[in-house]
Length: 452
Image (cartoon, rainbow, N blue to C red; front, side, top):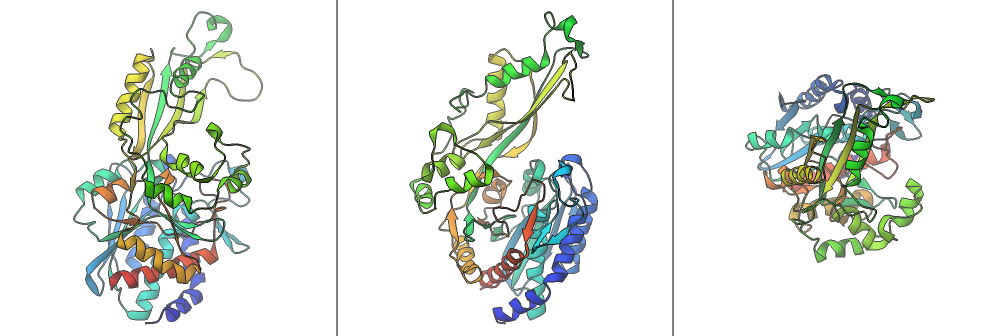
């Protein structure tokens, strides 16, 4: 089999794959709203069965996991693909140019909620399977898919699922759910992910909201109570003030810094893309900006809710207040210890009444840049992208890669079809069809070379 033969198949069948992706995107599967998850899992299972995968839809404490396995010519080698079928909420709806669950193709891009994150990665990898089956009648190695439905809500049930299914998920290497090119069209290999501990902090000071004239000077105000509690978590210097928070952090290596030294300065692109005028802590760009972005823990207020927020005025003293807060974790930090430290800190500061609800998360993990599988993924990308894939030690975002690295003992490589303006998690999320095709061509080559 020549790669030109497979590439020709992919080009001539691209419309069919995009139609399949469009059908998947049209099925809502919003994790945060528990909307359409079972239906989407059934669609994903059908896609695997269509390719001859032995497929199971397996229960968890939340959304089901879809697992598929197909044996290949080299039965001694197994490649595991991790993807997810859940998507972010589409709101604010008024900012979409076309409805989020009505996929729209225009100017070489497909728009829709979840089209990039992560449904195109499911169908593009199955498209690579199609091409190999068409050319050779069999896969070059064993292929497994694990496709979950809770990634966007913290993958809270996935670690336990992996621990309980280690034999089923056994493999030699893993391709992760995302990847793509940077603003120069250079493919990037992200070697790790920060962890995350996502919590909701809430406080209740009365049974009902109270007229502010009645209670303003004699009743506790839930909104103020929560604001004061939040104010103890981080200072104007951006340091997290919870005692012990930094104690277990593993410092980045000299190799980590050296890899970032090879990257172009991201500061101009960040300012252009996000409209920010400056960075925190006096950072101006270069390697120091990259290092701070991924190797420093964070405390981010993601949302605040209390009292009246509609048009006009309403003189009310809120009885309840809540805040969504995420803590990005770096290597060495654990969920268990961070939750303990947070509780101890709030109690010590006089906020024992502030409740903590853990909404999901997991620790950070990364793969050795010199692992042979990482090198294989890097080398097979060059022919497709006409650029050498560049190594990035870690990204600032989070995902459930820890159990794959530390429970399944797999090297985890990222490869995908994202690009800087894909707008994942935002209105008008999209993919470029040229990158969809390139990613699929890359996956064909990974499967073939991995099997050798």
